[in-house]
Amino acid sequence: MVKLTINGKTVEVEEGTTILEAARKVNIDIPTLCFLKDINEAGDCRMCVVEVEGMRGLVPSCIQKVSEGMVVNTATDEVIEARKTVLDLILSNHERECLTCVRNGNCELQNLAQEFCLDDIRYKGERISGPIDDKSPSIVRNPNKCILCRRCVSTCKKLQGICAIDVMERGFASKIGTYKDLSLNDVNCTFCGQCIESCPVGALTEKDSVTEVWKALRNPDKYVIVQTAPAVRAGLGEEFGMPIGTNSCGKMVTALRDLGFDKVFDTNTGADFTIMEEGTEFLHRLQNNETLPMITSCCPAWIRYIELNYPDLIPHVSTCKSPHQMYGALLKSYYAEKEGIDPSKIYVVSVMPCIAKKFERTRDDQNGAGYEDVDAVITTRELARMIKQAHINFVNLEDSLFDDPMGEATGAAAIFGVTGGVMEAALRTVQEKVTGNAFEKLEYESVRGEKGIKRATLQMGEKEVKVVVASGLKNAQTIMEEIASGQADYDFVEIMACPGGCVMGGGQPIRSSKDRATIDIRAKRSEVLYNIDEKSVIRKSHENPVLKKVYEEYLGEPGGEKAHHLLHTSYVRREKYNLNDN
Ligand code: SF4
Ligand code: SF4
Ligand code: SF4
Image (tube, rainbow, N blue to C red; front, side, top):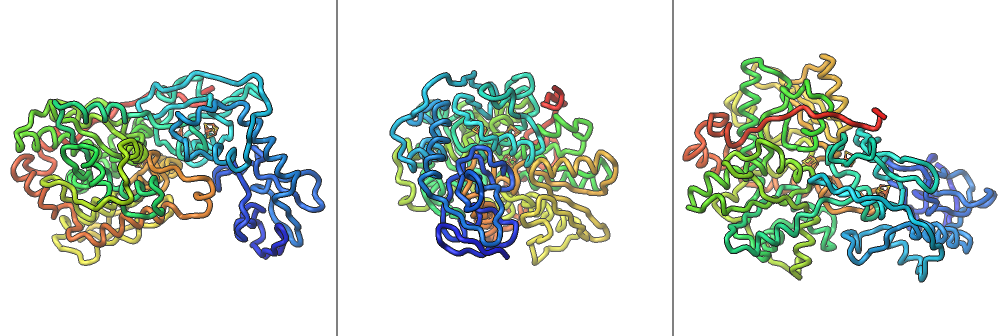
């Protein structure tokens, strides 16, 4: 342990701790901007400078380690003036359109400008500008709002192992760029959206779909159905000031009804269909010794990743569509027929924690019923925006339930939003089908938890089944290399592009660098979904009465011809342009 003094307070911390972390332990806040714990710790922006007695000049507290007897001052006149100058310089080169920016109210730069009471921008002059990249269906990059903090670059490179973006040029000409300045749409970006979650300002955002959803809601010829993914209910409340880890499912359903949707359904029901189809496909492959391991397919950023990076391994990927696409196909076929609604009038909106789902919606072979399975995808953040635009007092809403008959879902489906959840949900069904026994304990602890890669061996009757769960694309790469080199002997692989799974998706509420460093956001949001599962009356997908009915009345056997036509898809090989090709 090391003892030091910060602003006259004595603090004892472990050796190797930074001044920034030590200060937080005694409730002294040091402002940061480029700092992102474990991802971008470079001390570049100098916003976190402090004075250390005996050291020359000001030192960046995010990288300076503590030492015994150190005396630190975090708020001297010189320190404050230095931070103001840094802020002033950043703002002088920033497109200051706060009022019309989607990050208005949740921007780390705006907060700092407020905190430091800046009344004028002292430095006026030339500004770097560049074209907005909005070509992709998922992500928009506005270089005019970029403050060059590099948090996105480190996230893409270090966390995801992708390297779709990097710092180009030098000095004043520095900018964040891509391979040959191409759109993110045309390089090796997977649309995971983790860079958006990391960006402190509005330089990276999702592609807006709110406008088109309002248009559909106002069109009397449209029958507008909304479905919501499991992770949305674990994050939405945060947009309205509720604590991280609040289950806002009931209020969300009420708000969606108040917004004017004709039906409010649960993508969790779609997730149950995914388990039935994926479980059946896995069993078929296992029993017939066909292309193993089988890899899950419900994460579209992961699908884009394998198409770009390991196209030869595509046959390992399950052909199942993701839950919301499956559900959309069923709404425009089974549900339309049953309710006597013209499917061409049905407009399906998916609320997702994800920006890659926007891209997935536009892929080929996602139109099982002859119409696009899903017509619009909005993120958790976009739904919050719609609720705010409609002046709905979210926090005070009463709870309500999803609509019948397509709104019933199991606990297994709820945990789809957490890394390991798809695997656990599938195992509950597959293990029972293989052994013929109903298991009392449904929790598969070996695939739960925060580790990026979780391996387990399970006994299924006579057979030993080896499974692995990976979240985050860097971890996915490790597993792919094992499979490609022939070292792996897995049977079943779950991959989610976002570290921690969809609860930490690129469309979820954006938390500040400080929140990310001091709160286990992943654990709190995941807990919401595990609690829903634990309290569910039905916890296995194959026991969902909605599924039983739909298969009986309409689809036939899981994995059968009709199910295949509506609920399965295909993949393509993609050209890979990345910065390493430069
Ligand atoms: S795009 Fe955002 S995260 Fe990336 S460097 Fe610019 S401001 Fe930082
Ligand atoms: S969306 Fe993901 S892959 Fe694309 S630039 Fe951002 S972090 Fe990289
Ligand atoms: S992990 Fe979930 S949120 Fe992230 S890209 Fe995949 S499906 Fe989307």
